[in-house]
Length: 84
Length: 232
Image (tube, rainbow over all chains, first blue to last red; front, side, top):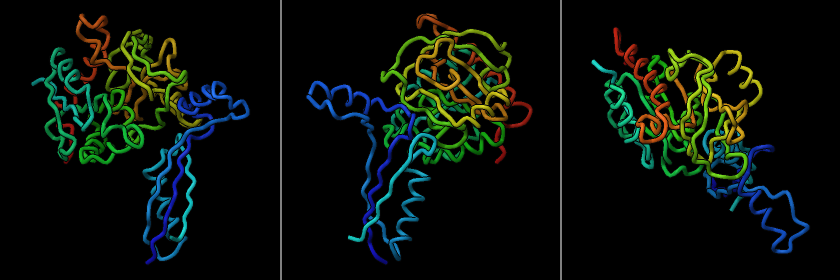
């Protein structure tokens, strides 16, 4: 078994209300960031997984995302797995 | 014997005493049930109250779904027992897959705490049995994540199967189809964002919540006799 590091980024699906992202975006002009737009907020989780190989680690994390870390009705996730 | 209503107390619930008070005012018996409880056999109906179960960590309802009591709530619901989730309780029921869809953040970016005018859409739910469709009620809302959403197929199913329980007359939060509350296919599991327990005492400005909770107490009474609600 090998320990892998995983990064899970959870984001709201397109069309799902994101008040935090929208509020941050509204504040940008006051700071002079006129060229930045389309701000979407999300969550990130770092975790370690013990698995036989990288694919097995990814399978476990994908399952965790589907069953717990995301609500598939409103959220998607991006999983990055790397050997430490 | 009056209907016995169990009100689940999660760490972070904050409307449980309001529900107990309202049910008792309306002639039911109510008691708190700690979320670690695994047996709901003593009750004829179960309410998941509002608040912030388990701090709403991850998402509202995401952790509460794993509380030991939720397996008992699922069995109670499968056996036909009346189950009502109010506000955070509605969020818990969707996360537990006892009701479809999800509650996203309000359109308009604001937390809402105000009276809401509702229209009863169906009378075939544990919360609206005997209430005429079209009845208008004023009941307060108090939420940030109250904007009900689901895919188009689910929405069509909710409409076709007469499972929308309550609609907002003037949609405050962007909820799809103006939905304020829905039920499962059997009609015994109901989730709603408005707080009927806060509209029972005349001092609170409206007593329209009593219409809904009285229907729940009647449903619980039917569940209580002749056979117990829970098959264990």
